[in-house]
Length: 368
Image (tube, rainbow, N blue to C red; front, top):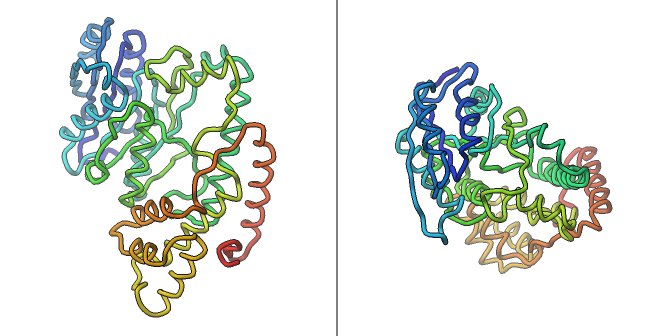
């Protein structure tokens, strides 16, 4: 169903003369819904991108807005470009609109827009889709890269299942995925502004934006039926991005897993602590029985009780959790060595099985 409010897509572009055409045509061929505008932020382009976009403009069913920028080398990165593109898109969408972002080397699925809108209709404030490597280009990559990615993704999914069982999110029910890729993110304009927009950081602006949305309690859906196809190139435009990761792993396998992953038991502790804080947040914890529960949780997480009580007064649960997570030594992030991945995956599977069979997912560690 096509909503009444504007739908605007924002795309940062850096020397994508060959790929910007397929990207825009995929957005033009959407089923059951259509964009009103697309904003292209041309970031320090030195090839024929602008000419190719201009030649294509009259064939598109949406208004195309091309913004050219030349940034100093220190800021000419994806974070700066995506933030600028999303800001322009939000202005055109208006306070009731929805803004989408994808990458210039991405080809969205024909139902990308319709399925994203379906997630919004079910109550989401933001929707994350999956980024799948183009199958033709994926076939050219060595099997070791695929094997590493499958193993890491499977473990990330198992950790996410622990969170789902120990601290369920009604806005993001299982099944879901674990990606936060700038190749497929959509957000209501009001929540975009509340979160402070895309962070202008050299790397990981997509993850940083999702973290900012969580801090202001946005309802985020990781929709498994929303996907885009991205390039499998190993000479990318963003230093430190997916292409650089693949190029590095072609030479030597990374010793550590992705920084977002952690040991299975630590993940369980984190999910349980989050669930426990959720029960306390917003309650009158300075007095009565709630105070006793808050003091007990503070002892278990090794933080001063005053810190936890102040945390519960934060205006958003996401802010409260962010503050408590940073204060507790028990919740300090610890990396996982790739050599230990198999053992950690087995441990995570045992935890999931225990949670699935529990009538009431008791907090065994925090209650100990």
